Length: 76
Image (tube, rainbow, N blue to C red):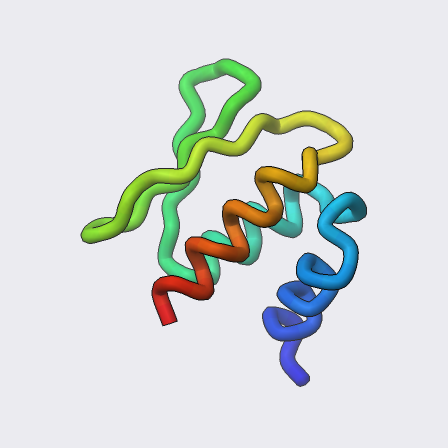
């Protein structure tokens, strides 16, 4: 099992225990680019797809993790 697959499984099993860096790494591996204009929120964009806004806080709320999972599953 690759690191991406392990991270996806960890996100599905426990969405409350995921760091911002893990979400950022996963989205960038799926072709998204992170943009930040100096604020606390990052916007992830991918050509041909919508954008995802994730706050850079600890901890990341489960709703954002679930949103990322739904978007990544809909792309496959």
